[in-house]
Amino acid sequence: MTSCTSFASFLISSSSFPSLCFAQTHSITCKQRFPFPSVKGRRKFSTLPFSSTKRLVTRAAEYKFPDPIPEFADAETQKFKSHLLKKLSKKDMYGESIEEVVGICTEIFSTFLHSEYGGPGTLLVLPFVDMADALNEQGLPGGPQAARAAIKWAQDHVDKDWKEWTNGDNNKK
Image (cartoon, rainbow, N blue to C red; front, side):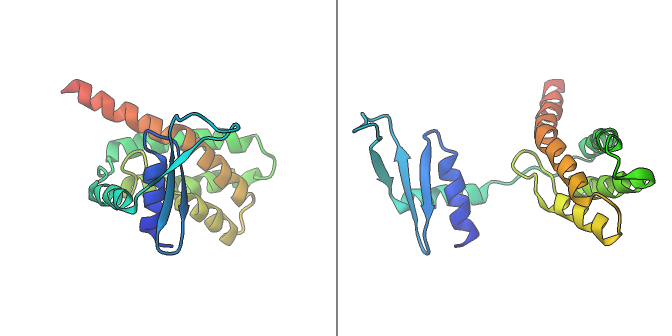
């Protein structure tokens, strides 16, 4: 299965109609749910032709995410650092290495925000995997727990904060 196929499945599933997409070896079978009368409690499905899927993928491939905003990255990094320090301080496992653990996680997160994050849809899992790996490689305690706390915070705040940040800029113009 190619990434285009996966991306096509994502696009179709995020359309205005709920859908079921099944990726097969060389094609995608998508069934759109329409509000047709149900038969014995089940909905009727219609098949979406592959050419429609191909057009969705083509349009999506042409979309360019915005570049990272350094000021946003700086502000979000500070929020992240203060939250992670507060969250991890509650756990006994870190002891005196809490500052080092938070510092490594913050550095990786900051690098990601400055170089790759371009708004909703661009929050990746890789920086958080890198956090756990870096902490484990250096023999620091609680790598998986720190990465879990970091990703949980990022999922809850980064995209929302980006939207607020960019809407604030649009209102100033």
